[in-house]
Length: 335
Image 1 (cartoon, rainbow, N blue to C red):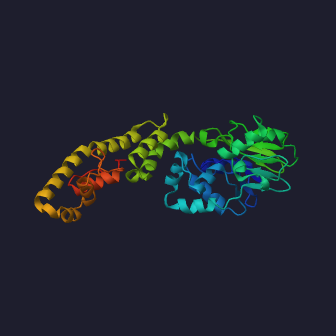
Image 2: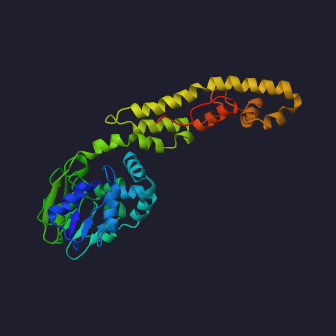
Image 3: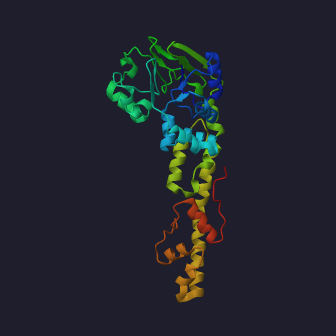
């Protein structure tokens, strides 16, 4: 059995590790989780573990994020990379176990309560989520959980990047996340032989992937239906000194152009309301109801429309009003 640390979409490194370890067709290959996010080929890694007979993938905190729909930038990149295959891959991730426990070896993505059966340890601890890490701190303080692991059965885990070399304690405890996606190494341990194998990463993948996929991620976001406040918050959360601001600036400029169009739209709306009053007189309500901007006209006439925002909470509202008043506005940022 070869247990492998966090792969994070680094398929070439996975192939290299299997070759260096001399893995045969009938050997069980186990991933401690975090198959995806940050690397260049998450789809190939997922396919390997779905298709190889006897392969076992555990659920890491990154798979758990996808399953629960908690998508930060790294998960949004993976969604863009997988494209139409994304939903099927996430459905498979939802089936993954949180640990492996046999007579010869144990594996978990991250956390354990030594002395407690792995099956009884909370899922968030095993997966290494933020809440799970909090539980570990409550239980062990500043000490790592493995400092309390006295069982002779070897245990392998990932999640915490140890550095380019794995953590090996007493040939029983194996910390295998050696930062493959960050240009360090991919590591595995063969159990019960307790032999460690490692291959260097081919590149600092995340530093490349985060730039390469930024436009695709930006295009996938529902900018048009977000409120302007949500857009401002999203731009702040996506700002990363390593990414640069060029793509985000395009979104910001698009949003600013729509906001800047509001005074012109107000002038046009006032003129259209005046025209309808002059033409329809007491039948203004009927004439307004037949107008493409009927909702805005009714609210303007009754004094229920903000003179600055014109009831436009989102870009789509501004674009719709503009179209109703003969003013073409960009419906999406030019990404």
